[in-house]
Image (cartoon, rainbow, N blue to C red; front, top):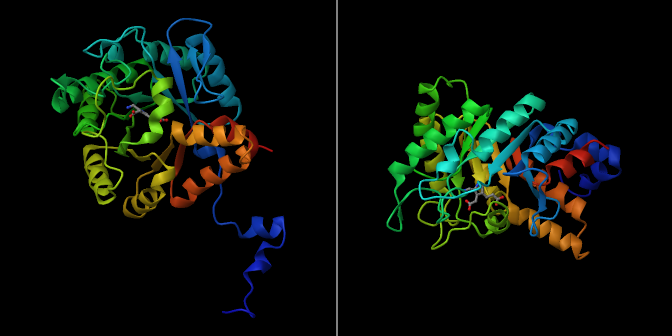
Length: 324
Ligand code: PBG
């Protein structure tokens, strides 16, 4: 078919014509809302680089979880900022750690909301790296033991899904074994499988107080130039027992999302990270873009690329738009 017989504009004529022929749909069912929990009470501290996002104490976190449930969002992703950091990251797996306490509180008040916990050590170590150090280098094998212990402590406290984000080799297997030995063989793992060493995590590190005190994360997170390597990373995670796989960040990696969707048949998550959120908020605040339209276009692009699940700081706003 060719012009003038074929005219693509015929199917774009009006909103109902466009609705009828639309290929991709965004739904609240896909959304996961990240939240940051801090020790204490009555704390709702704005995160400057992420307008609309806060560090919350457990009392306010529970209220936020209720609001998220009311919007129909199925899950939150929980990050903890401990009262004290140490070299052993002991706050990560403490029975009364900030995430563990938050889990019990949410599970008591909003039991059906899925709570996914981020399993990493960077918020809990003084040096801010994602694992244990040997000198200035990451000690991978010591770290995965601690990640296993951390994931198990989350499961015991009520986590519905654990999500390892440290990019340590063998972390999914170590966590699967720890969970199974602890009697949590039915707790799924959402693996941050292809996580790149990205500039777009900047605002998050303010939010989670987790910036590395020296060096960078390039020896364990992926090189942004690589996509074959993403396939290798995901192949390993699937073999180790991942139930859900993830590509992170999302926006600069839509090609990777598409490729992963074509090569694997597990549910695929995309993480629309802090810097991607901050850019939209900043430009909208300047009046340079329509923030709401940009948000919906960006989230839709992730679905179109192949993401089944979208982790996004826009979750509440997007859910509101979708319910209109
Ligand atoms: C922990 C972790 C990070 C993010 C999620 N888990 C930061 C990092 O790796 O430096 C980033 C999330 C975001 O930017 O929104 N390792």
